[in-house]
Length: 264
Image (cartoon, rainbow, N blue to C red; front, side, top):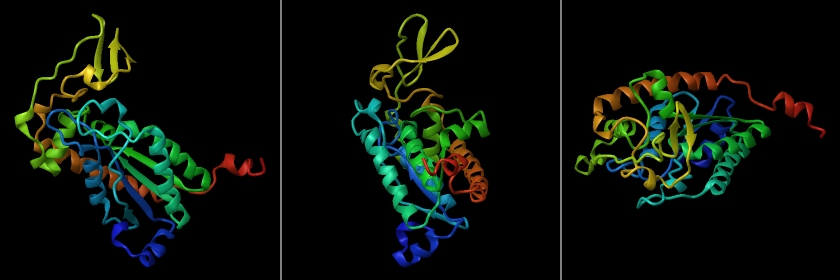
């Protein structure tokens, strides 16, 4: 089911059902290396949501296509709405559906920069008596299959886009990635992350000053294949379907802390 295709009379009945899950694809419009489309981070979650749309009790909401991306803004086309705006947006969306009866919300997230905002909005709903779960698909994938290694704008995301929108990958823009070490012993490994003597530290810089192409952290984009993308999308989809069934069984309502402190 798709929320946008319902009239309000249909939505009224569906949202009040206790096992209804509102699935919200959330991402960003930002650079994804030389060959990845700017919409990668919302297009992939939107496809996962489509694949869940026929499950009993699932209502797919329209995608949130913009997110928190200040570290990518030196690359043309990137949009950053900021953390506070993202928090306000997600709280407004979730509170609106909560006010109409919905209690279970599953966010399919495609962009790590959104995590703090999603956690904040989810806690707000929890304290009202609802439940929010967030799935970052790119972290799930390599846990299901270590060959589906993650990165930003690298082979994992390019492979996923090859599976769902192959025409958006432009091989003519492939370029060698140049990454300069910060010192002889401190070397960038993923966007603002760097390694030093076997441990990871964050050095906050504009991504364009870290990596020339913008794609970084996983396998080179040239190693992406449509076969990889299709297998990964199918594998993660099945995992998500199994998780939805579990999410529908989770208890909702005020937690013990809220109940014990209602009078405070």
